[in-house]
Length: 126
Image (cartoon, rainbow, N blue to C red):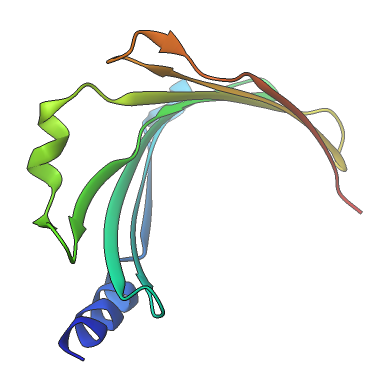
């Protein structure tokens, strides 16, 4: 029951999204802190996802990663993130029209020194 209470408090207070616009350069820093509790599995986790963005015309470029902060089995896990190199996510979105968006994403695992799958997506909104 104590874990459920902690998870509820973390989820209520730690699902935070922040964005900082760095002047007129088009560069942004976006960070999400997400706490998740899975009731049936009785697990609680918290992650932080820093992301650097750059707007260039109609295209938005992003680069970020996800870091584990806490889980109910290992407690504080943020120090484990320094034991390995991160996986860096890259993406670009382009608003073709008001209802059509093109997106390309990939990742690069610095530890394994290999690129992840390249995804090309088109979104139609109506």
